[in-house]
Image (cartoon, rainbow, N blue to C red):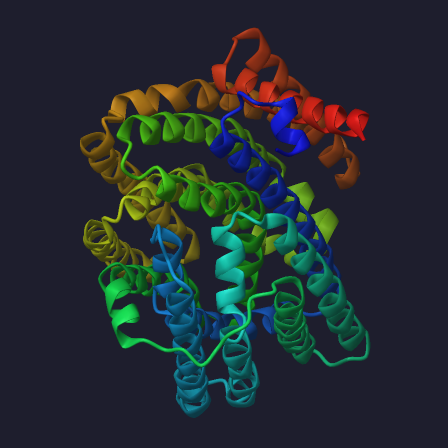
Length: 498
């Protein structure tokens, strides 16, 4: 029996593992996003919006290729309760094979991509970046196994170390006038560092074992996840594809930078919770009562944090962009404000869909995603000739409709009624809106220093929202506070026993 078991004999092991995973995933996301944010901040100050736009033109093709590499088998391996070493080896060799295929496809299609955008420089850029696909395939199984074990402590170390070294390379290249190649150098070196660290931190090593039957046993689940991943990835970048085709590279750069700023809090929250809850929900997939309880608490906690972040980001978007990126990026401001509307529902959608993945309903998940993607196509066809702002409004509407559709199936499958979930998140939305209106009033005060305005709004908004949650006794606020307090007590208790 470990020291932790003696100190907390009655504590639910799964809950403890979830909490530890969430905390380390939080450190991973905050550390990684923080470092990447600083790196891209420096690069954005040196490089031009059009150079970011050129790289964004390739993003959809590279991202789709990444989805093809594991072909859904990584998720299937996590979801499978009793996976074997034979399963792991089979997935390992399959991902390498797909890495070679995707690298070759992107390499030979590079001239076509350049012709599509009428941007000749994309040919060489695409071919160099295609190498990262093969690099990524060599470490996919290591990442998957650490994720399945909820070992985010190691993943945190890997992310931070790789980002620091690759970021240094990108910044040095930018200062030496490498232009868009600075972004390429940053991306390629990041993949290389991650690969090396995956093999260093994870003791798993392959053997000459491969089984078609093993892959076949996971194909039903994995194939649906693959198609869902492909659809999701393609349509997440479809707006960038359309903007790159019908607008200028600079316009795409403004949009891409606004989207990256909006995704920092969204990815931190939904990414952290999703990475941890999927393997945890998979372990209790047969217990609908525990699934509902877990989803209920997760949704309420995510809304508690997401809503004030997105509403607050909407209000402070102008001083934030001007201070961080300089006034040359000011056309990004209205894009960022509109994208905050997506950020309100995107994390909730992701958490809800994790339930469907965990209980093995990948076929239903696939059909749902097909319907949602059809909505996106319709929205783009209606809005693309009316400008980028109208296109983003169309995105917001689609995400909202998708959320209500997800609620319908969650209600049927685990008994978490749609109105019950709305009731759980409604207090956070109302209080966050009050907070947003409060900090918006500061814009009527003549504060010329954008940094000072940003600091005043951020600090006052955080304090005001916390006070509102405390005064109105929001359950998820006190639940989150008690979890943090319990973790700190555990750490102190373990230290005192040493």
